[in-house]
Image 1: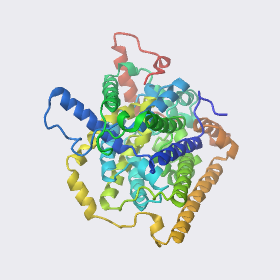
Image 2: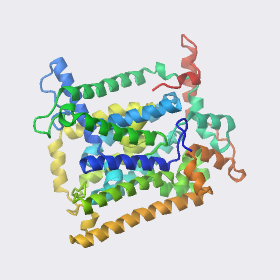
Image 3: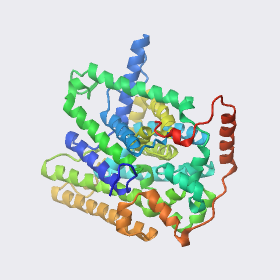
Image 4: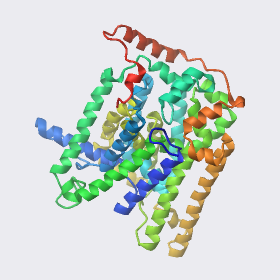
Length: 511
């Protein structure tokens, strides 16, 4: 039975995100889009700053995008925040290494730039594009995956593989700290956080204040401004769409954010899962002892759960799109000509999503849960738009000049005959269903759990049970010198503090 106080099985997030996608498709005739919404809110913030301080000609972001508000992003933040309240655990207690925080900021910058080049983020191309049978999204997939693997390798070489987790749950980390064995790497988070108080982290506090002002400005602006022609400038303001649609879009974000936060759902790890699951199955000791990947993460890949959840979402939205296409004459969404600039954007997003430990929609979810990696990635997001907005004409012209194919959907590859297109679409859906079935069967085979156990138990609890089996137990892994140095520096800072250190339990509830 699902409990609001505990994490949920991974597949549930696929249903939640799939439901949110169908809600958005029903309202707008297209899947959820996020990155344009954030840059439009950035434009709104720029307009406010320019007006407040009388700065003429300030249009770094707004020269390319009109100000607006994106209610779905706000809903995702609120949904994840509600999960933190329900579970009584913010992830603000986690002390990430400085190297990972720098990488997360860089990841946010590069990812954001990549979204403009690819005209969409992983939410657009994975969650929406693959369901829409978009050829651009399929080509995007072939580039983002190797870029993600390369970044995963980079993190291991930087000795920060231990931070790569679907969720950083305190109970799991404490278990690893006290029991050791194969779960010992999971326990390093508690060790490094012993003398860390997020309420005294001024970098964290400063960014959160700026972030709160950023979203507050967009929300207030939506009640003040409107749009004359119904297309440009505050298209989602109260004056333009009314309370009913605002509540609907907020609800879409709430459903997606809540479902993701209860599991750790993310697009970036889902498509890395099959390959890494093979590596974990054959070289468990390498991933544990050389790359220092936590046991909960190694089990997550072994279980195939991220891939399963992703394809649940893809299949649900595909069904909705097929119904709209065949019975209500709704055109297939997200049709665009694939080009080489899009593939460059995919490579940028492959790096950024793994460096941040989360794609864009997952990073918003992690913001709501209080992860410091998401906090430092946020200003990177905003700055990452500039290389595109300042030179928009150059990138747009380059994209037009480097078209790979004019076939926009898989259904157009063989014929434009309606019957053949329908059969092609159905065959595509059967492939999605087949991959979903394969992932479930493979996950059961690699873990040895029953379908009922996998369907009713969250990932961390399954990981603990898996590594408690006599044949899977092992010795604790010694903490590397770099991690010990992080702890030593925190202890030294705590010893010079004017007031006593705050106990770990006092950090709960901080966002």
